[in-house]
Structures are given as structure tokens and as C-alpha cells.
Amino acid sequence: MRRIAIFVDVQNIYYTTRDAYQRQFNYRLLWQELLSKGDIVQATAYAIARSDDQQHKFQKALKHIGFDIKLKPFIQRSDGSAKGDWDVGITIDVMTAAAMEEIDTVVLLSGDGDFDMLLRHVKASYKVNTIVYGVPKLTANSLIDATDEYIEINQSLLL
Image (cartoon, rainbow, N blue to C red; front, side):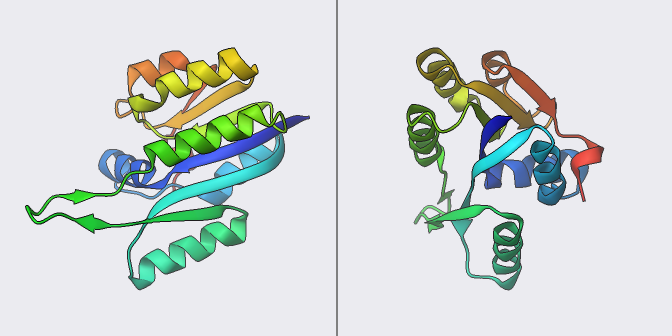
């Protein structure tokens, strides 16, 4: 059986499924799909902390499914722009999990091309299999090229 670690770039998945389909991603269905491929030994969802009831409800649902939630504060800059991404945190956690040799498959939910080097590195250095779930046309080609398996997020994985 595969030993699977899941890493979810929540903001990326939220915005890409919303923009492409005007619907939300079905994390419970993802969990069931991945359980059919192996044992989920680690599952982390990386999100931005916003104090509204809908976010708290969503985070509670993810925890109920089996995800650990990591939150980073939402930063509103004085110029009106906002910041809140988890790229470095996800990268550190993926590399740590791969190095510990407790997993053999990294599943990344994101379309962010910044993760292409990460996937190449963990494949070469730790011999882990990589799977990326991303929305077609909103997933960087470099990320698709870097992974062993690309699974399109389509209508079947949405609420």
C-alpha cells in the first residue's frame, strides 16, 4: 500500500475552482479517492486565518475529514493589496515529510508553478512519487511537467 501525504494550498484551490466552475472543491471525495490508492499518513491544509463564520465552518469540516489545518494571518497592506500565501510553509513540510521516509507519495493540491522545483527535488532526492491535483488551464504547465501524475480537478470533484 502507498503511504500518502496530502498538502493542500487551500486559497489556490478555492479561487481556481471558483473561477473555473463557480463551485467548491469536494475534500471528502478527494479523501475517499486517495484512500483507494493507499494509506493517508499525513494530510495538511494550508489556509489564511479570517475571522468569519463560514471560514470556521469550513476549517471544522476539513478537520472532521482528517486534515490538520495550518493558518497564517491575512495581511492587509496600507496600499490596499493583501498578502497571505503558504508557499514556503508547504515547501518545508513536503521536504520534511519526504526526508523522513514515512511516505512514498506526495499529493499536492495547487496549480502554482512555484512548486515545480519542489516536486523535482523530492522526486530526485527522496524517490517519492508525486501527484498534483489542479484545475485545467489554471495549473502551471511547469507544475504538470514536474509531477509523476497530474489529475484534473473537474466537475466530478466539486460540490
